[in-house]
Length: 238
Ligand SMILES: C[S@@+](CC[C@H](N)C(=O)[O-])C[C@H]1O[C@@H](n2cnc3c(N)ncnc32)[C@H](O)[C@@H]1O
Ligand SMILES: Nc1nc2[nH]cc(C(=O)O)c2c(=O)[nH]1
Ligand code: SF4
Ligand SMILES: [Mg+2]
Image (cartoon, rainbow, N blue to C red; front, side):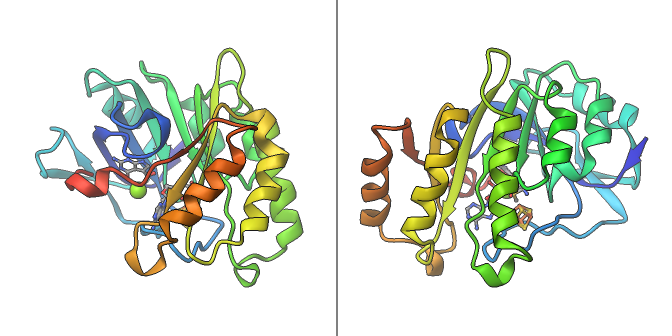
């Protein structure tokens, strides 16, 4: 089986509870959402950029699409990996491909948690789930009620178990409604090991620190809640 990737590189996880862990990053193309804050191009590319030496800024170009065998081989060429971040775009759009990967390091899924049928397919394949809850303006969603139901269903399917960690990240902007955050956290807190409030990185969209601290305080009785911004952007690594 083959798929298109935009890039493969080795760096450290810049977000959430595993910040600083060495990972291979596999970036799939295509996404089913259009988040107003998204920092990543999701269009399908002709070639996949592959950085063989971490931090070298020298990229080889591999023609898309790539086979699962080739992608596994590239990932296994990196040493010292904690895990393999499957990101994008939306990696769950490639659930069948993910199931064919044969990597030495465990898989870490980075998902928008809106595709429950795909989530079922990969539930025994992934060891870490970094699941976003997308609190977007309703005009950006086709069916806001279904969006919420699908999100909860994905967390139920990929919930924390003895073999899988699952945590939630919520990107918070100055326009994120407090009530929406509270409602969804109540619905998924039983499925996750911790909740990360991730302030959006663009200065113009950022919430006030006091808003995040107040939210954190209100959730701490229910779930380990941490405020962690994107750290890889601070020191300019991939
Ligand atoms: C580019 S997305 C790809 C994976 C998946 N589609 C998702 O959204 O979870 C990777 C992570 O970056 C986060 N992200 C994207 N744009 C961001 C921004 N401007 N500020 C903070 N986090 C951002 C997303 O919320 C997600 O947690
Ligand atoms: N260092 C680093 N950490 C990340 N965490 C999530 C990322 C992503 O784009 O999915 C990402 C990324 O692109 N780079
Ligand atoms: S779901 Fe992820 S990749 Fe897709 S638009 Fe939102 S942040 Fe970007
Ligand atoms: Mg990123």
